[in-house]
Length: 209
Image 1: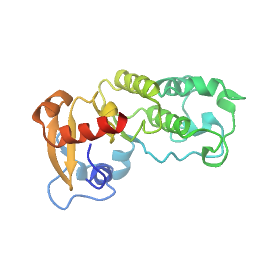
Image 2 (image 1 turned 90 degrees about the vertical axis):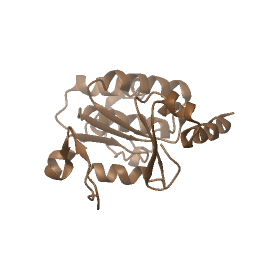
Image 3 (image 1 turned 60 degrees about the horizontal axis):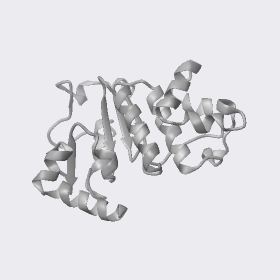
């Protein structure tokens, strides 16, 4: 969590090895990322961005984009976890409904849920979600996050967000400012410290009031 320009997206780029750090290192299970082949590393990371790239194919084909061999049952389960199953069922042809270019037939929130379903279907040990619920109402957001928490047991999920309601479920919150980690801890610990996270939380609460 952190203000715009704090370095959140840069950290994701480093995790994916779009470029490597000038100093220090990033480790997974104690192993420097630079020891992994790039293709091998990226095959173990799924990512859903705030900008949801969909194609003029069917709903099923869009969810299956990264895993074309996935079973219908796996596609349905990924849609359920992302809380996309209900609106998909209401579409004229369900999972076989063709989407317009860039998913133009869907709302922003529906496109966002399909993007999450696509990332979940990849079934990787690391999942990165960049503002995953920015366009969802509060009730749907809670359901999606609860489903992801259950699905994510034994995995690492990175949530990049400005929203306090999204981040409060995290096991560890890392607060960035100007490219540096300034705080980390649980939601309760950081609120009690009265530092940068407390300030961001106060701004978020005022924004929702």
